[in-house]
Amino acid sequence: MEAYLTVEKIIKEFHFTKGDYASAERQLLLFSQSYALLTDMQADAIRSSYDAKDRLGWLRIATILLKKFFQVAPKLRRKDLLNIFFSLYSFENLDHGYDAVMDLIEVSEKVKDFEPEARILWDVYKPLTSNAVAVENLEKKLF
Image (cartoon, rainbow, N blue to C red; front, side, top):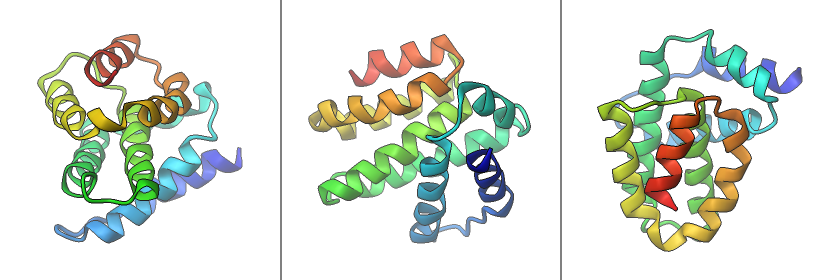
């Protein structure tokens, strides 16, 4: 229950100022660490408490972080960026929409040389992603 309350607090207190990617990355990394500790039922419950457009907005920020910084980041930061992306992809629970395809295409181009590590990290968030189509879309594009 502690992880659930932590995720909820991070969501409620999240603030993004355009261009302040360092602050967004710090906040979203805390989100990903706590989100990874949830059960699948807790993930579904917290996901259903927030509008899809808000969840998509967070995923957009995660995608931008990964696009901007992944290629030049040291290995540890790459893992952090992937954790952020995967946690927010799972939180968003995307299906077949244009947005889902675009995010996955943009990310797949960046992480193709980091695939074994990305697979290990994705396996943490996969059980929290209740939409089977979302899981299949990500795995087809990335792995």
